[in-house]
Length: 263
Image (cartoon, rainbow, N blue to C red; front, side, top):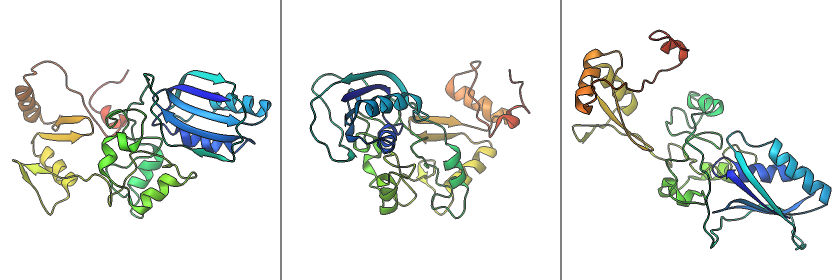
């Protein structure tokens, strides 16, 4: 059978999910991303094929959403094993829903603050279940070479994770670490500050009432200490935004409840 799955199925670990799910059945074939969604060719007994399709719907990756599944009967080819093929752009126009950026997952959060983990305090940590998606994609199908991560060649350790079907970073396109991925730097008055921890220094400056322009994956975010009335007033003047509310970021809900009521 040829199966085309449409929806939020790229950048959410869908191909690795399919690859692992196939191991539960006596099926062979391939899966790839295309500008139509995710396409699968499978050979096997009818009942196993039907059970597989049913499981796809029931056991989706956390970030995936299926809009439509198209199934077509094809003549047998005689596939040996199952594998992930390189993405293909078909001639016909395609439309693929792209996952939004996803906040850090619990597994990455644990690694982030583990002094023995190689990604200890690496701010761009991510995996198949979290991290940037929409703000790094440049075109479909969703592959690393079609994202802004194309400029960062994975080190051997990251590449090993990317290639290991049992790893949660298997085919995670933004996969990176401090040795091979994006870095954080801090500029003050257009001069790069050297010999400092840029995040700690930025936090110190914000506490002193300074306004920071934080370059994120999707643009710049202007930030100041929300408890500093002078800093907030200055930011309002600079933005010509005297009344419209600003977004507020806090460590957790308990901290937010110190300042406002939550409904």
